[in-house]
Image 1 (cartoon, rainbow, N blue to C red):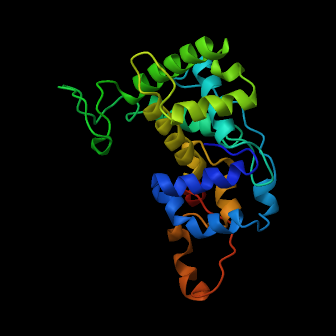
Image 2: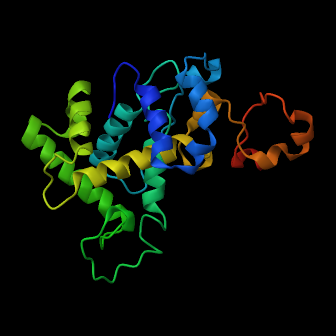
Length: 241
């Protein structure tokens, strides 16, 4: 999953493979970073995360997710770590909201074994799914390594995630590969989404790939920049207020 020699490049390439709409939109910018072009100084400057209380995650769950996200996105010359980019804040807000509570999910069953393309087939809400998945991952980590996931060394975290990705981590009554895919998807969402949702702190990913943010904020400049390289400070939803 994660090649430690080029961890950032693999994460960004993976974003396209998983089909995240935002990542796909930024594909040209990702390629530029992957080819070794120098990122902007603003993107490389570490962000100082503000103190923000958790809405639904327990401290143990937050520690697990922080370790996972920092393995997916380690701090380097392109951006701060996943945690410092706000990914834990992002997923905490999502799980605390209507989506996390399964507000629009059909959960009356029957829940039969399905094919991967049929999507989510469990009676759990996303909040319950994350809680059960984290508990199963930590139980497996304790059995395999003698300690919870967040207390593993960086090398063991990487090895553990690779085992999950290969579907070889034996979680009790839980699909480790499917859970790893869910964690990876949440990391991509938090890293590339508008900062108003808690992730992409300081618009770090947008600055990294030179993405200007909300297209609507630059509608009056469309003619001016047509056919030209766009080099504008990215604008988020919050900038419209």
